Image (cartoon, rainbow, N blue to C red; front, side, top):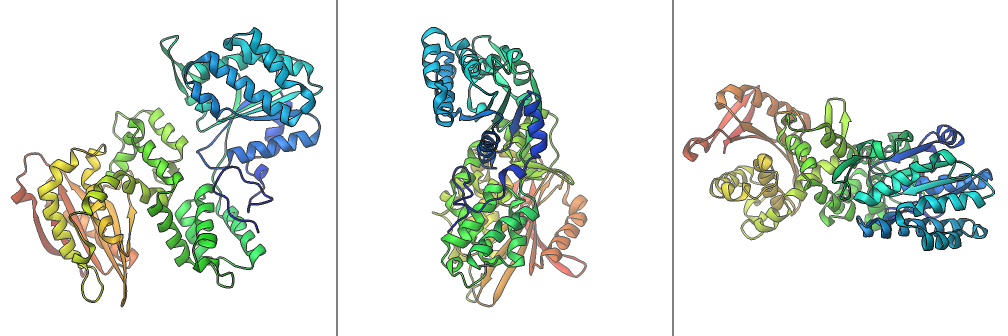
Length: 528
């Protein structure tokens, strides 16, 4: 039985898959190769780049016109900026792969001979020349994980490919595809030798084109998940299919991970006579997030980078991008797949990432809160959450601890939002969830607490705003926004939290709560 793959390249013999070569126009790519172009394929991690390169290598070799070789250069990263060691490793990796594809090529013997005679600064070019000279067909080289190389080692690789470019195809590869996360024109490579920043565009100015491997569209998701029904008879309900799209926006790893969790890991999903429902997909999402699976946990490392923080922090606050943010900051965060260009500008790439980001930024705080807060304190006899009691407790907690806690956040300006979400997450992890809506220019963050209980499902809206001027100036608009959001999600209760960030404001003036009304809906306003 095939299954949904979440580790390594997809093999269509064993995994549900979409035809890899359909994801980028094959005719365009074959034209680049025929015209002897050197070009780039880039996309965020775990979107199918390696699967695509392997499929293309097989396709080209079956066509019989070229000798195509795929090689992964990630091992070269261990050499850091040691050009001699790095280029020696690169030559050996490519030669080993060439020998696997073409046992009669004597690629490994050629590599050994070159490495005995040449320095690392020219060894790659010399090896490729010797190999192409002996090859009976033009060589096509597909190099994966190129941007894992560091500093002068990466510069040397790019320059050696460029230096003999004019001798192709007789004495150098007819075409080279470099693959990584970023477009080469966005590389900023620190050269320890030259004591300068070298741009990828200048080190590899022979690049003809950059191709980007995109996410799945909605139709592709339905086709992929439909393979499970075809082979097992177990369908996804229309609501489940819609929720997979809603949660992932087509991010390939997330799509496969949700489906694998629901169909193969969860006991209810393994009953093939029962369909995969929206409830199972919702539970699968929660399980992946709570386990902090590798793909999602890796986000925490990226969130620590200053250039990522400069983009994500204004989103968490609902503010605009600040003037100190560079185009490279934005492009880097786009290339990582953390954000995308939506209809209203930059936004977090998908709803799962939008939930994971504040959770990852508050992991330590959630652990600390385990010792001082208990979910049972806020659960009534009928199983519902006592939200006024919970928010009053947070209000007092914020008054007593915010100065100490907020100073320790890397995302300090979004600290009030994150601290509240950490507090809520600690409480609802026992049986509910928090949905989040935030983004650039919204001027607010909307939280929806969903708490199942014996009598039904409690839905509570919490809107967060930063108070930069007197509350009366923004209260009417804020109440309207809170009421609109509560109506949209069918909330039973609505709360508006105003974090007063005006300087030198005494706590007795900042702390309050009162009832307000907007078009017949009661909204509790909390001052912090």
